[in-house]
Image 1 (cartoon, rainbow, N blue to C red):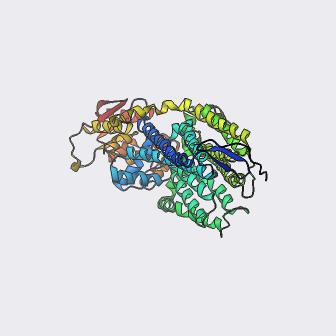
Image 2 (cartoon, rainbow, N blue to C red):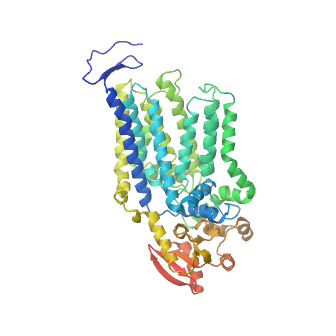
Image 3 (spheres, rainbow, N blue to C red):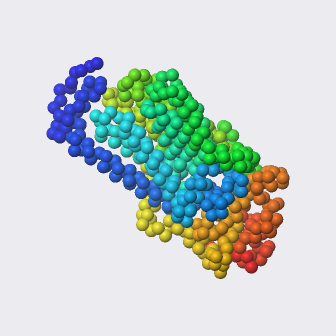
Length: 540
């Protein structure tokens, strides 16, 4: 080992430190400044939380959110179970999480979005901690700088700003998948594979597309040179996975055919609906690949992150062995790369592909890039090249994503938040009725159930998926629709004769609402404009 020390006299307040490769690190911060670093880091992380929260509270309602809110309140307010009692086209765990929050706070949309905000921020926090701990403890400032870089790379990434904060299943599943990765990629107690499998099982119960991650996790805990050296780590991983999926399996046993349909057969119907509508984008593998190249990597921030990912792969060997810093991080970078490859299967699986499907790749790309950069401190030219690449990635991402965070100015005006405006619309619906709460619920038929639900009104569980079940029903035979509990145009009259609504809520720009509007008008329902394109039809 080269033990020559550079002839440099440290400046005032600096402490000379020798790194493991024998070179002298000059002008290291004083202990007082080292103690300041965590405070500055937590200040930045707190600001990130405020920005993500303000973005979530002010972003428009996404039509995918209705199904998560309506299914959760069908359970929390009526005791109905997904699959068995109403159609549900996702894994079931968010039904119970969002439903429990509705039981506590009676604001399902607000609490669901807030939950997604904290899941997104905890993902940011895990990245910060993982990168911080990967850096030599003799370089505390470097660790905090890289950790904050990880947080900023996520905060400003276009995929993150598009996806995070909605009432859907992306933020929570990515958080759990990242936690599973971090547990499996670090040596420790014999319980780490069990905990990693448990988190992956829960993540799969939130979103099915993360299920392929079991393969790289199994490879990690059972590989011959694994540092864990535990007894039967593969069995522990499988046990944890089974425990995480046990509630979902019990639910599937109650309605096996409907569960299978909702998670595996419905996507094919959705593809058929898109094809029938003449939708052509990302409908086959070449189209999905083109979508990835043009729509996803066409964003400068995403393209810069790809460059950082490649830097992290090639700046130091991925097959390092031994106890050096480079070798300790090589297995983690390999595992993160495998996670990206298997998450691509989840992104390419549904047809068509959508932008948010590629968000799960982002945290692992950030990890690879920054873990790789952390191994280059003994090679100044490579290190500074990587540091400049990180800065360029943050700046390019921020250039396109900063407008998304201009909603910070509305943070103090809670009445302008999207959940508040939804609740206000629901109250305007309630104002059209003299029915008192003790006289029974007000039933609203709609494909936008989050609006009346946020004001405490009841919606038809048969339409808990919004318009998704309705538009897919025509692609099934009549007897299959009955078996799966789907209500299509042919069943509408019979279904509503048995479950008459007090009102029908329609949205002007939605073609699927035409049938509901025609049904209400044919029965003499009076129309009332609610604003934002919504029209309420009240029963005579």
